[in-house]
Each structure stands twice: as C-alpha cells, then as structure tokens.
Image 1 (tube, protein in one colour):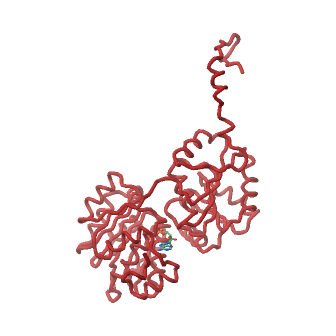
Image 2 (cartoon, rainbow, N blue to C red):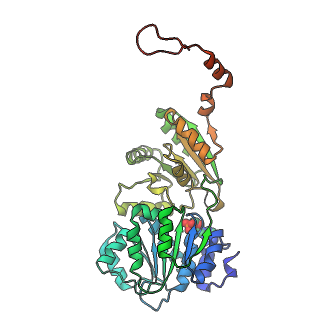
Image 3 (cartoon, protein in one colour):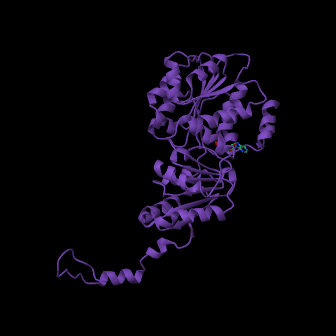
Length: 401
Ligand code: AMP
C-alpha cells in the first residue's frame, strides 16, 4: 500500500516523498491505522522495520502546533536511538510547524532547558534524563496525548520497570500509549498490562535469525595475520560504508590507531567516549563522512545506518543475538549486504553453535576450519577400536597417535 492512499496531509506526504518513502512497510501498514484511530498498541517489531515512521506520521498529525506544549512523548533506551528517532521525526515534520526535540544524558542541560522553555511539541528522551527533569520540575506532561515506549525490552535493561511506570504516571490526562518491543518477556507483559488500555496487538517479528539479505562470509586466520587480511579485504571490496565490530573497547582504540594509517576516513565509537564525541561520530557516520567505523556493541543494537554495505566481526560476537544485531546493521530494507567474521582456532566451538543456531550458510574465504576439524566416520571407528595404553613412564596417560 502507498502512503498516498492514506489520508495524510500534503506537507507530511511531500516530506515522505522527498525521503523516498512511497510504499508502506508491513509494520507501517499494520500500525498506522491503529495509531491514527487512537487505540493503544502493543507491537512486536524491531528496528529496521520502519516502526519509527509508523509512529511518527500519525504522531505529527495529532499535534496541535498552536499549543506550545509537549503533546507527544517517546521514551527510548539509548542516546543514539534518541538522536535517530528525533531525526526521523524532524525529517517527516520538516514542512510542518511541529517542533520535535530530544533530551538524553550527557548533553548540556542549560540548552535542553532553554529549548524546552521555548516550546517543544514532541519530546524524545532516555529514561534517566527524563526522570531528572521530572523531579526538578523542568517538564510538564499536562498536554501529552500520546506516549510511545520504543524498544521496551531494552528500556527495561537500562531502567527499572518502576521508573518507566512512574514517568507514564506523570501524564495526567487521558492519552494513547504505544509499546514496541522486539521480545515479549514477562516484565514487558507486565508493563503492557499496567500501562496499556484495551490495546490492539500486532506481531511483525518473522524470525530471530540472522538476516537473509546478507551474505555471511567467514575467514579463518591466525591472530597475527588478521590485520593484514582485514586491510586486504577492505581494499579489495567495493565498500560504501563498513562497520567493524570488536568485543572490547581497547581493541576498538587499537584497531582505529593502526588502520588510520591505511585508510583516510576512519572513525571509532564505544561507550568510553564522551557523549559529545559519540554524537559527533554517530552523525558523521550517518552523513557518510566516515567510511570505516570501528565499534563496540554500543553501535550494534537498533541503530539504522542505511548505507552500510559491509559489517565485519573482528572478534567472534559473544552470543547468538549479538551476531544478528551486528550483521543486521547492513542489508537494511531489502538492500544486499555482506558480513565477514574473523575466526581463530579459539573460536571453533562457539562458531559451530553460532552457525547452527542462526541457520547461516557460511561462505568461507580461504579454508573452512570446521571441515578440516571434522573427524571422518572411519577415523572415529578406528579411535573406538584403539586400545587404551597406560603410560608406562611418568606423567599423564597418552593416547597413541
Ligand atoms: P526504523 O525501523 O524505523 O529504524 O526504519 C528503518 C529504515 O527504514 C530507516 O532507514 C528508514 O529511513 C527506512 N524506512 C522507513 N519506512 C520506509 C518506507 N516506507 N520506505 C522506505 N524506507 C523506509
């Protein structure tokens, strides 16, 4: 279905056209009418599905620009998601007089307060900063008509259920509440039960597997050869933008320092950087000023970088979800992407599990260590027949080769 088939005002429709949004995504088709009609919503959906616009379009329509007060509230778990969310609203609302604004930890409070005093219609915020402003009386939710809890499962990892419930309890007037989550554990069900009124439910999670719009390459390397292999790979590939994930911050720093000698537009991001620096790197990467970004998992969840053509796992991701989240930064909205994961001999048992559980068909650059390590049925049979020979000398018993 096309956006033009809906009853969307021309200023919003024009902005959507400019953004290249013509056809609605499945989440947008399912969620838009529910939100527009004013129902509460409990949606199982992930980033990458178009859920931001699904909420932003009707939310902008609900705002009365003449009323100088916060009318829409969006709560998100991280600072980066906060910036991403508010940017999407800004783009969609650019031809209207609706004012969106984001508040998140680490940003200058005086600027926040001045902007809030001047007038904000839609506030996007992380829970910590929001609580801070609620306790100090900086904010008023007197006119909030619609509250959105985005990535609710992640929200409950960074804040407490009681905090979120407290924030929502500060909205005194009757309002609409929308909850989006990628999973539905018990605490999210409780949150939905406590905060939503007669909600409509939609589920748009297809599978929690690695995305299929991506070719999953792997390469088996000796640790000391990894860096040369990475440089060769990045130079040979047609890289529009690459996100290179490391498991530890110090490795991000180290890789950035070494690779900036070989490449010009390199950057790095991890939770150890100041908020200003993180925001600036995040924006530069979004605006294509950085081509190769070294990152810890801080950049792995939820963030949408639509130009990323390659994701590299310098270290094997820890846990199945991490592989899915990292590689999901490429191959967005049906585009084709490539993921390359470096494997060393220490990773082999984790690798088997990762490939099996994510149902990946790995494409090996160089040798496939899992094949090399496979013991043939004949060899297994020989091993079974081999008699145990106690060690006649000193030390541990040894099996004969
Ligand atoms: P989200 O799930 O909201 O983070 O959106 C994921 C990506 O899809 C973002 O890059 C959006 O700009 C893009 N997007 C959202 N809706 C549409 C649409 N209807 N057509 C094309 N791109 C879209």
